[in-house]
Length: 569
Image 1 (cartoon, rainbow, N blue to C red):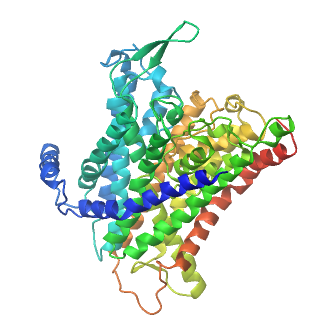
Image 2: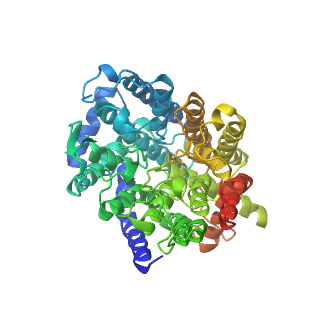
């Protein structure tokens, strides 16, 4: 660890903190239908979309209609992407001449991008054409992120309204998210990436002469445009197989910081948007504080673990003063790699600039645990906010039990319906993760995909289903996931983590919107204070993470103690 490393981490978080309020305020105005500086240009485009689609923007929907519209939109996106991947061989912009994608891999990939997971059981540069990358994956990067933002805004309205039968119009919310927020910011970031050396071309590749005199074809493509929305929408799927470790996706230390900044910007600012829309900006800052404490702790834990190095290598006489650099890029070093690993898993991004499977056991445990906490730190674009709201509802319920009062959050009484929905939502991740991981650890065909036997092999399986159900997309790379079993079961886990979670959350939002919003009284438990922040952190750690401890103890914890004892597997 170095002072420069800690300074780099601090600078990144300060930069994100600086944009939370202005970007959050801008999004509050966008979703409130207010005029913004982009309205003169984009409002005619927005209204044109509504006319073409036959949408009445003033007509709002109840939670059920909103949810059905979201599911229909996602199903249509899945069908189009699946068809593009299967028919890739006969579609244009395929200079490499790639054939169509196999059915099970196309199913997994289509589900992955529609659910904002971007799990990739393939190498992009050797599997997908430019058309598939642009018209398929990049489009879904926009639409899946916009869907998450729309859902978060719908849940926010439930707390802002009183005796309301509706929570917004899905088609309006998803259009505004993509048109006013994601698209303009992605254009700026893509241009910045191009200036930093990220390719943006329709050429298939460039031929280079190696030092030995041989010829090597280096893959190229429309990388910058996909890289921008991949990070901004917390999608994470890379153009290249090694993701942001590839010099064409992430060439410099500056581009690396821009990657991480782009990941955090919208998700973090949405927390402030929530506070502004419910007329209590202190609540937004309380959410920012909650997320900040846990995420900074995660970054520090990974950095410390990786800086400690590998005692097995030290015992063999190797210099361990530089820490564990296995699987990391020298141009980034330990601090930037640790920062990226923790942020990409505290979010539901899943992009990587280092190989998570090469982290030390404790260094690898932290990213896995951050996903298992529910992807709320600050989580995916939109999905992190509504996940955090679920934990906040559970926190006020616990507080109500302790003081003997009816739980209340932002003027809304929390009743049996809301609690049933919240509990159902938080059960989705452990059921999907532990259920599929347990079966895979016993099934010979699934175990055969493990890259490293022993506790690390269990970690590979556990991480895969943690990443899929958490809609993250990162992986311990030793697991060979492109099999019928993993393509199918990981896709099911992704679907559960996205849709089985959000449907009860929408039902909870519908019930809350219908309740009377009451002003705070002398007995109201304030939810913007350090006390509530501490309670919320405790609820996230206990309900989000404690249930996974036995599985983690059998994987990375055992591997850690084995490493200290000098054992290898």
